[in-house]
Image (cartoon, rainbow, N blue to C red):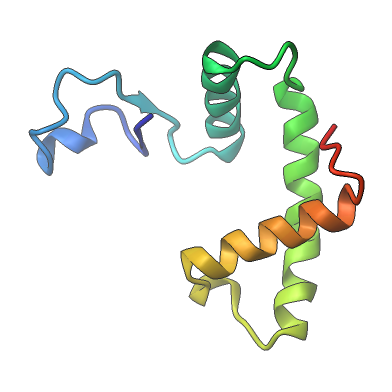
Length: 103
């Protein structure tokens, strides 16, 4: 799955992925979340996935939690590495869903 901010902007930089189904999100997280959700729904063996509205609410709750957590760890959101961010996402999921049930 490949995403870009603006349609066809990848053509300026990468010719190797031409022919792939590139999807733009116009730098709007809700659109990106919806497209990822729909892709997972199409390619998943799970019977049901939550709708984009539910996922958007969960994402907003995570975004409200993140600054305080980063502050307690002396981290700045803009300086998080991928690994830092992934660990924080995992921790938030564990706090929100201690029994391992996401939705």
